Length: 405
Image 1 (cartoon, rainbow, N blue to C red):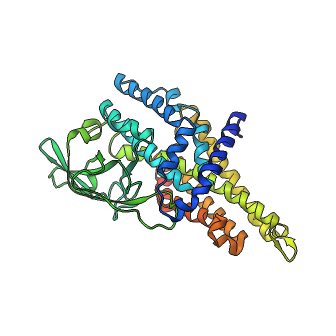
Image 2: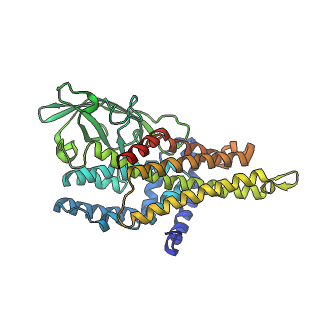
């Protein structure tokens, strides 16, 4: 695949029209007035029939779970991955935070439940998250274990009869302040005295309002204001085995492996998010360079501006090629290795930040003003180099995966 098909271009046009008519007019509310993104996202789901598609997808997943059937390579490919990523790219042109909130709820939270959960757990929590009837959060990160999410985890699950008692704190949790359903990772405290770094990791599902569960108000952040982020506190939260995903401490692909699989998907998705930011910055910068005059000459005639535009276009082509490669492989049911996903994430996130910074420089003083939007894209892009693993951790992940292979 080296370009969008006619069908894809038609989808792009429709999504772009929705973004222009239904999202851009509300950007200030999302950015500066603290309006949560969920109603806009639900409207998008309604307009494009995504809710019905999610219901059908859930039905297929549930049938396979009940039958015990392992998905074939074709089933793993699923529906057109290009069509799925188009919405990510187009939304990120205007508000990457919308994609972050959507992806965590319908991807990480719902995906973890549907992969690890029993059929009853899928029906109890998975469907409502996939359809956006409820908002989901995926809680793994803690204040003292950002890049060492699994090894440094301190949130504990202690057996108490047939129940577990959860205690701890999670931070930087996307959708945390408003989540109806929280997928939470905790270390098993079985009283053995084993090194906490090596303890078993369990995955639970919590509901808003449970005794001992506190969801803090949204944090004040540098960027991605359209994606509420907060802390989650657990004080003697009692959960039954029905809230332990798979209802066993040894679910297939559970615990540490579940988290690693989610990191692969999340990191590959960052490339599509980066492409949206880059494409919008390039579009805005070209238009500005054509019309902004200095000493009577459009600034696009000056070589220093041309150099920035050329470098921005090179970054756009490179990230676009990464996304297209990912689409092509996904369409055949192939997933990237840990090293490949980390490499995509590392390069694309850095490219998005550099392109957005260059866009501000091209706009000069105007680039520092909110109404021109490039300052928002620069702030929003910056976290792409932090969440789903910092740049530094991507380097480590790439090298270790290559050495072990």
